[in-house]
Image (cartoon, rainbow, N blue to C red):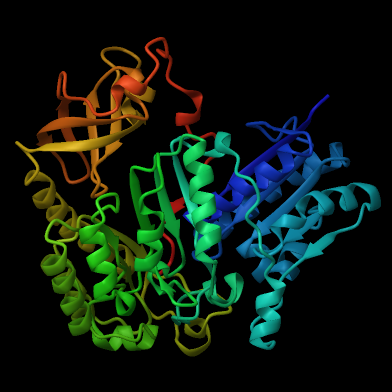
Length: 487
C-alpha cells in the first residue's frame, strides 16, 4: 500500500513553494497526498512565525493530534519551517508527541528524518545556526534546496513560484524573518534561468519570483533587472511577476525593466508599513515617508500604467492617533490597488519585542484596522471603476469562489490582468489556463466583472476541445493562510 502524506501550510508564498518542494521529494519516496490526518502515515505542518494567529493555528492542530498519536504511534508528526527554527524548545514542551522539528534550511533532509524517526522512535531535529554565529557559518547551515518540482501541488499547473533568494538583512524591529530565514543569499542567475526553462517545459505560463525583499537580489554583477532580462525570452513563459519589494531598493534600472520588458507585469508590491516617520524609525524601516512618496511617484512616472499595492501595520508600539492619521493620509494619497493591513503582533525574538512595549489596546488596534481598511477599500473602488468600459487581457485561473459554492447557472471563472487585478466572468472551463480578452462592465473594491470577447481569444486554440471538466489542480487542497512575503 502507498504511504499517505498529509501536509498543511500556513504563511507566505515562500512557504507554499517550500511545501511544493517537500511533496516533490516525498512523492519520490512513494508517498501519496491525503486530505485528512485520519489515514495519514506522515503528518507535516509547514509553519509561519510572522503573526501570532498563524502559530496558534498550528498549536491547536497539534493539540488535536495528541490522542491520534496514542492510537497511531507509528504515524510520524513533523513541524517544519519558521516555527520549528524559532521555537523548537516550546514545541517539545507543548507537543511532546511531535517526531520531527525541521527548520527552513533543512527541508531537503525530510526523507531521512522520517526514516530515522520511524526506526528509532526518537525526536529528530534539523535546524540552521542562529545569527549569533559568524555569518559565513550561518549561511552554510542553510542548505541549498531546490529539487525537482511537483506541479500537482500548485493551485494551477500553469503558474509557479520561483525562489531567487532566501533570507533577509533588513532587521525591521517587528519582524522575525531574519532570525528564522537567515542571512540574505541570492541564487545564481543561471540556476534560476534553468528552473524557469524547466517550468516552461512543464506547461507553466506565469512565474512569480520570490524573495523576502526581492528587489535586493544581487548575485555577482547581476541585479534583479538583469535577471528579468535574462529569463524574459524563455519560450512558453507569458508573464513574470516578482514579490515582495523593499522601498529603498526600488532602482530606476528595475523600473525601466518593468516598463520595457513586455512579459514583466506592471505590478509592484512595495510595503510602506506606516505613514509616520516616528513609527518608521522605531520599526527600523530605514526610510522616511517623504522617501516612500517620492519612490511611489518615480514608479508611476517611469511605468505610467503600473499598479502598486502595499502593506501596513496598525497599532505598532507607540503609535499615537496623530501617527495613525498620517498613515491614513498615505493610504488616501497613495492610490494603492490594494493593501494588506495587519494589527501589530509582538513577536518574541524580535528587537521590537525586546525594546518596545506592546502598548496599544486591542480594541484600538481593531478600530484602526477597520478605519484603514475603509480608506483602502474606497481607493480600490476608485482604481477598479477606472477599468469599466476597457478591454483587458486575463490569464484564466479557474472557477471563482462563488462558482465553487453554487453549481447552478453558467460557470463563473476568475483570472488576473497583467497588473494583478482580479476579474470574474462567465465562461467555458476550457478557457482555464488561457489568456483571453475581457470587456469590463462593473467593479467592486475587490473585483472587476466582465464579458469574454467572442472570437478574440488569445491562445484558446491551444486548448484541447475535449477538455470540458474543470481540472482538479485548480482547487487548493489544503487550508492556507495566504500572506504576502514580509518586506
